[in-house]
Image 1 (cartoon, rainbow, N blue to C red):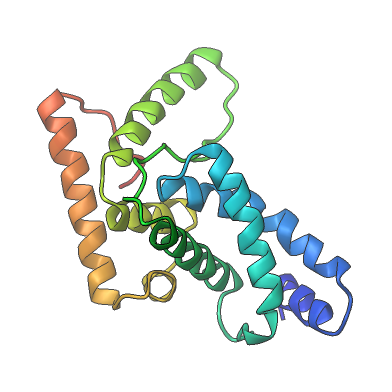
Image 2 (image 1 turned 30 degrees about the horizontal axis):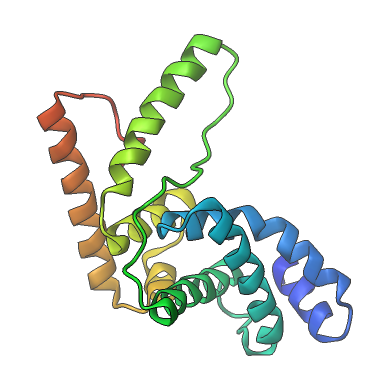
Length: 186
């Protein structure tokens, strides 16, 4: 049993403090998923709180045989989609997610990496929501295709198609710009 499963079990058994560990561990990831879906920072903060409330209320439905992050991201994605339907407004334009990058010692290298990352983030922000989410879940959260399928509520084959098309669109755009920098392993 991993620590997530232990914290879930202890929370269900009545130790509410254990849920705080889960919130602390995943709050930045949930926030980033919401940003990746195109919400602005203020709305993302509010939605993240709502996601954790929803997760707490439905904790007994979590299957310990499955990945906790995938379960939580599934709640996140579904909650965001519900918000779009409630407001009956179109999906918001993408605001680039806070994609983590490794710290480096050389300030010039850090600056260049940030510049490249910013341009890739802007480019990813132009992709449709299914493509953005596929890239985010695979390369930021490192979810398996099966976990992504569960989170997005689509077959694994469709997840693979979304990833393939998203990477193709990114490459084509970078080639048109004459930009040859690496897409961080994408």
